[in-house]
Amino acid sequence: MAEFRKSMHDVSHLGLRCAECSADIKELPFEPKNDRPVYCSDCARKRRPPKGPRSSFGRR
Image 1: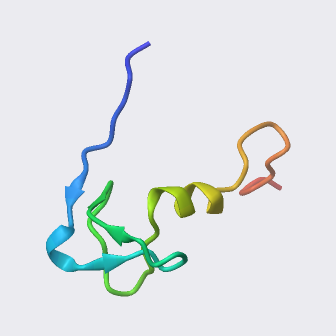
Image 2: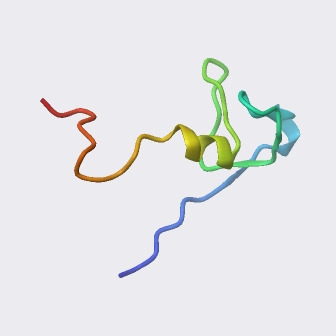
């Protein structure tokens, strides 16, 4: 199986800080927008919903 990696955007010139822990953010896998908070990779990982069969997100 081929490994998929998202391209990272250099955002070091924007002076971004994580909305949760205030860590400096140098790279993101997307281009940030002013209307949404950004999180460092550790905080983003903690905020993700759990994967697996018990996840009912988006199901009815």
